[in-house]
Image (cartoon, rainbow, N blue to C red; front, side, top):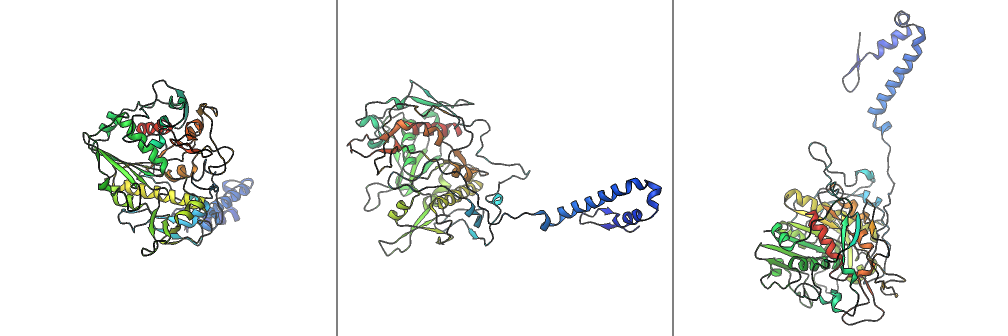
Length: 483
């Protein structure tokens, strides 16, 4: 009997079987009444085998399809006009990022490939797996979702004094030093639904971070989180023994500026350094023409800030954020020109602000994930966007946030997913953890700077930044718990 073999090397007697069905020998085995059934079974088997083996039959192309994600909870900046960040992620199908290797020089970048035919969206930033093919997504904390829970009144708050923490806290963010008279916003703590957060202790934090460097990199909201952390570590007390090591990281006042791009302090007892670096977009910025003082600034969407490329090997805990500077007015004011793959962005999808932000956030998350491969001791967090609470207008059109009554919007967050879909998507399947503070902060519209300042400016409200002590203290408590 001659056997024909399929691609898997299994012997199948298709020819003999068909000959048997055609001849009289068939009736001697089963009887005519079963012949039609067996013929149908054989034909079905052959068709199923063909479907599995033939890629033309088995694949369905998704080319040309664009998937939409929900818009960001909040958009843009206190300093400029809002622009919608209703992000379309389908454009990313045309920009497939390679896994970044060792970071180093300013010129290094994550490779970006132009793909004429869009990739299937399910292949965008594919989920990383270990050798056993088990998902190793680290943004899902199965033990506790710290972003799901409720605000609870706590008469042991605040954690430090806004009037005494002068060594670390800017006067402009200490509402105790302004004309504000109510301070009920200070007296709340966050209680996760399924677990208890450890009580923050400055000495315990320093012991845990012994011989380590903690870096917060991002916009002014990360600067607020940094100042909050310094006040929490010290209890708001002066610590003259703490050493200013900003020069070690190039954090000096540039010519023509009033302050450096960041600060760094070392606690000598534990050799712990806590630093902040200002990078509002988390993109590498470099002048297009070094000889022209009015030149545009190349904003490399696919490169990390030069500061991170240079100092990442000295950082043990990294907290990133971006969000409110992604608007057309801010880009124009800073003369930022979006670049990708070393060239000005011309793609009609990527040039849209929301898409550019999403692309940059994904890029930096992947770059940091690659650094963790090289430096397993590195722990990285991406903080979600901090909400704004302008009502009846924006910052420059009469918008205000006059509410001083806590929890008018409710006190509980019940959702499982983050309200910041861009960051949530970017850290998925990486070892960068999400520091999810958006929904819990959304409930605290009474805790902003509002119209209060040391020198009152009528008609101008700051509904973006927070009073300190205040909501950013809870962000640090959640960070402490996740560490």
